Length: 381
Image (cartoon, rainbow, N blue to C red; front, side, top):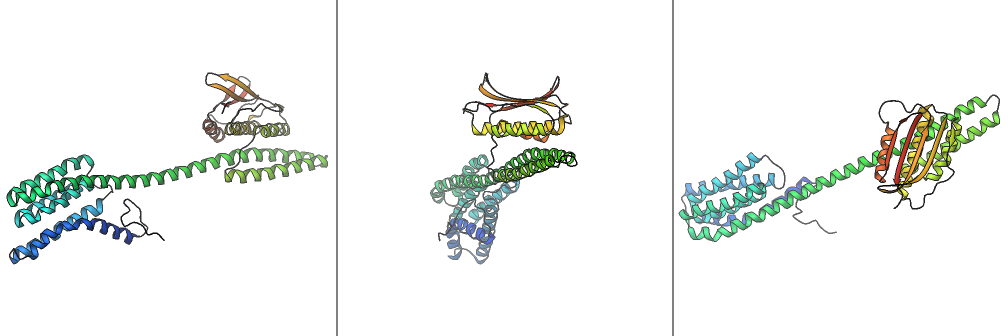
């Protein structure tokens, strides 16, 4: 089994202890620059009071540095608080270097690292050279040669940390973006399923209701015809169950020819005089576009049967040439009163989304003697 790397920057950890351990290892690498101050304190170059003060100052400095880097490495923080801690770190480095001499100039490496990894890029581009300049000023007092030796290191390590900090922040943002995309995909799938179930069940249940009413009226005097209607109800319900299962799995793509045949049956059962083409020319029509037209026909016929109160409906499937190229046009027109309400219903809204995905358009509204729905899709792949 391959182990995870010790420093997977920006990674989310389920185990808080694992995250803490990796941060300690990553931050601890830079504690090597404490060797000079520690050696200076244990070498006996200072009085007892000075040594105690040095250990205390060094402990406070390391504590501020670790708190600053641990809490703000790649994570957004309050700018004023971060800037205040960086300034405090610089002040501590200056006081300790002035007090104890040149071996303590290495503390400015930590100040530079903190600037690079916690400050915004623009602020870091100024703070890092400023840290190097402050170190040189202190070096004039405690040891110019030591300051020159550390100058390039302070600048390079600071700007290197800006890259690391930016990498960590980018990685975290990418992870958040990936989670957002996954959430949006799940929302889109729920919308797709809602549209499919609305279109499928709305059409099938309307047809079942109509045939049930017909069977009820035929039952006393024409039991044989009522039995045929009951058989049709069984067939429609079984097909609806299959359609719902296929829609849930995302594989269902209705065919326009099958929908035309079903339209004739549904309108006739509802007592609507129907003019429906027996077949249509679908040569060169993309499958997604044909599927969108089939959904449009199903939604239009469902609205005719359930809401319009029409007694006549005309369905046309035509090829037309437009400025945007050839299109296949579906027109469903009835002489009813149209749907209820002033705005488009859920069915028309979902249908518009389907057609837009297929590169098509939808027009629906009242006309002089009824209601018309026109759906168009590109006729060439």
